[in-house]
Length: 248
Image 1 (tube, helix red, strand yellow):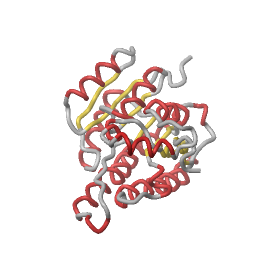
Image 2 (cartoon, one colour):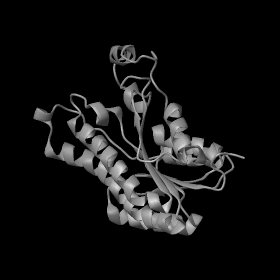
Image 3 (cartoon, helix red, strand yellow):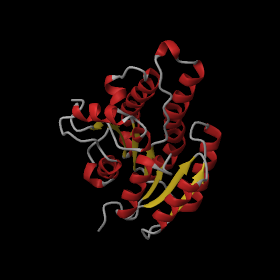
Image 4 (cartoon, one colour):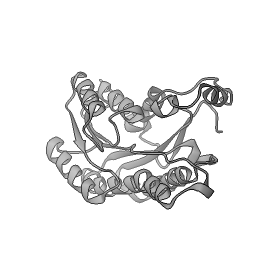
């Protein structure tokens, strides 16, 4: 039996990158997949096609995760389409990196709204579904930057640190109803975003990692499978750092 067989997972921001890898990993473990992204583009269609190729039921939805009204509508539709939501992965996120002295208010607000408010939106709206089921696993994507900070990313660090505090609070609130809430804090992961960095910068980052390699989206997805499955049935309120010991 596959680890997530019979489960329905909702993953935000999953048209590409880490979100896509998590969706595909869940599908390979037997979960039906509902995913959201902000636009229906080539990445969206390609991800949907790949998910359908795994043999599970998969549907994609266009939604701005930072808007509560859109979140309410998309979750209502997903429940109609799938009947339940067993796993929620709050993955939607952006960066607007610059030093604080140069940071515009808009750059701060955008990152907080997409990265942190989206976690509030989806957790708040999905929570009644899980409370009724008396079960569920919520996985929030934080970052090692939210644990240790990083120059030029004060907005991003604040959003990801906020996710950690939110995760621990929600775990205490809903644990008695059989719902778990955990966070994953990835380190230096090879994605489209990090691929745009100069090669020397990437080499410098990797040199700081004890495992001497960058992580992959699949490394993060494997941690998500653990937290979504019964293997972690007594794990809640925790932050798992997937960083090759870059931050300990």
